[in-house]
Length: 232
Image (cartoon, rainbow, N blue to C red):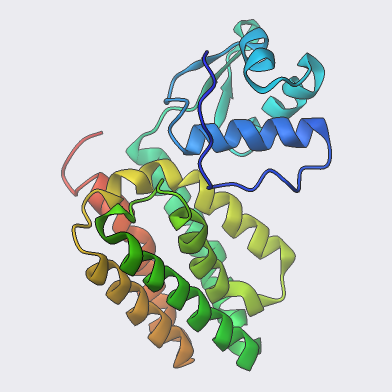
């Protein structure tokens, strides 16, 4: 497997052990599409690709199995998990459970700094799209970090590290599907407007309506990638 340039989806600078670094780099390439669904993952190839030893590489692979990005195939090694409607539906279901509770708590406990964080994240995303025009697609440099930053900002005041960690992992697991959905956005202003509406509803601190809008937002990827009545 030839090495591929990494995008900005995941920051690898914080990985403080080789096994964590192996998991982070490999996850990075999977969700960025550099390693396609179903790709066989041989230890020797991975060691050469990432210049990390076989033992920490195996430990990194085990971490990604628990995150649903890699499948173990018995004695034959590993492969990148396939994508399917069932998988995306399950990710969306779990995101809804996690983010509805996180949003409820954030609205309850959020202060002025939380509100400013949401507005700041939205502003950064808008300015990026103003500069790049139609090149704001998922996978473009810097956009991934800003998009995830906005969704994280909505939940940041929930005061639960576990909820935020679960949100982060599930967001990344949906990334492969979201890249498909993003092809449907032909207008940066329309993309920003959708997120502005979501931010406005959250900042209004009306928990029920805010949760309903976020739920609709999360399900939009599933509806776009796998339209109702259409098979995998």
